[in-house]
Length: 320
Image (cartoon, rainbow, N blue to C red):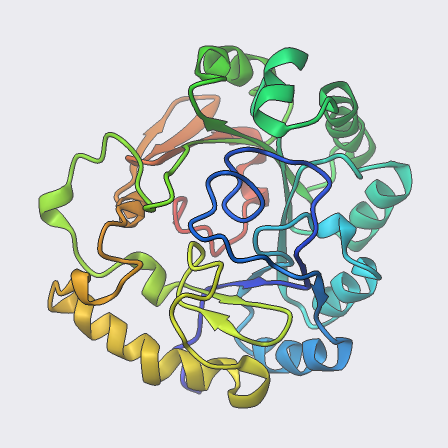
């Protein structure tokens, strides 16, 4: 079997809908790189099953959303059950607003592998600035209840995330201090601009083939494929996974062409790659003590509780 297959697949079960209005959002907010409107679209279930059948032998990590809120997806748990029935590793990012009792129970019963909740604040005032609405108390309570209801079960792995921006940077340390003994993992990353850049990248001269080109694929509800997770507006034409299949698109055509350009350091020949520096989160430095394993890159850091680290997906590229 040819094992050249994405390690991670971002699967847009539904796109174009969100229940928050974060200014930094890469698709719904001021940080979007284009003015292109995204219609609300849902992936046909039969087309989705076709993808599941192709993915199953390779067992990639599948995230059931791109840049939208997954808990708004109609019949979401039918899709999630099918993924788990195909023995896929399922990891979810959510804003946590809809993590009500019924949704928490469904996620726990399905043993979703990982759930990250984006919070970005430690106070109601800051939360409203960075997330666009006043749901801070609700989201924090939902996370606390999810942790309690999971108990000592290994799955799902539960994490919270914090995107550093001007309005909330003063709360970063308090955020980490509050959550580090409650959740399994904390993710902190710098906000990036419409040019796909973050500040403080230290290794510009060592730029090489972007890790994403050999790791991840994004598939939209129509089956269209994007070059990477920040090509959410489909600026690079790859093809359609429903028509060609994931493996065919991954191993040939535009993906291979862009990989070759990166290997030749001809980054400027790919419009979305020319100014991007998000490739730099593939240079991790790991620090460990008795309680935590911390992994840092120029763009992110993760604080993993050592006593819960076995719940991390085996495909986690920072903990290999």
